[in-house]
Image (cartoon, rainbow, N blue to C red; front, side, top):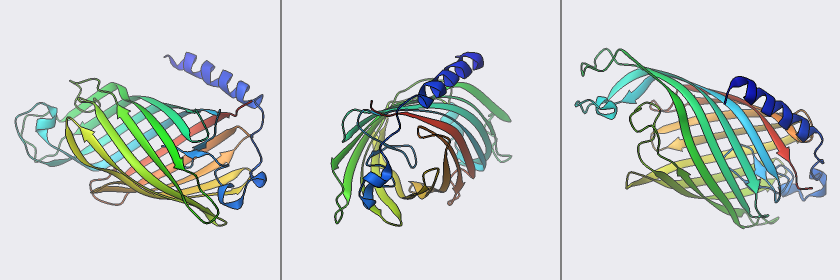
Length: 283
């Protein structure tokens, strides 16, 4: 999709969102649901989708990592040894989410990416000094299921399942060579001072199973037009801290700005994100 068509589509979506009916007021809900307006947790930070609600989220991410761990054999070279290289990437993504029921949400996400990796000076494998690739990024779908609803004195429980489709098998920097799957479980509880989530997952890639992402998250809707999010997320040796602010431009449009900072050495050093989330509540 060209930038002009993408821009026109985004403009039309914003206009439609401005004419959409306002969602139910948070003050009509019990305090433990007020932050998330009673919605089901999704893969997007601080984003909860209700029955019949359709969400569009175009966003942009940048990645900066001065010590990305890689092995030349991951790029088709014979040497199996770990090195640290300089990695940069820009990514444009589109997220779509729909509340199938008051417990079930379906997600789709796709990306276009441009990435580069400068090899380590110690790497004598014959790898190019700088490898650059661009094209289609991850394409994935996810199903979120709130199988036990939250009550005043009891947390809610949810599960999720994700599929990442293989593509660009010969583009080692941006491609996904094998079908990847993930399944996880989480717990959520709202308080007057904010909402907490803890979740963990297992993942599979190429028939190999491993512990997937774990996360601890905090979210608070401070006012009608402002919310904050903070969380730790990652795999066993790639943990990052994420901080996000959300600014509502209208009842159905919000600006999301976040920054991810690597806590462990194998995590991406810095990963900022900005996007415009547009919601179409059930009519």
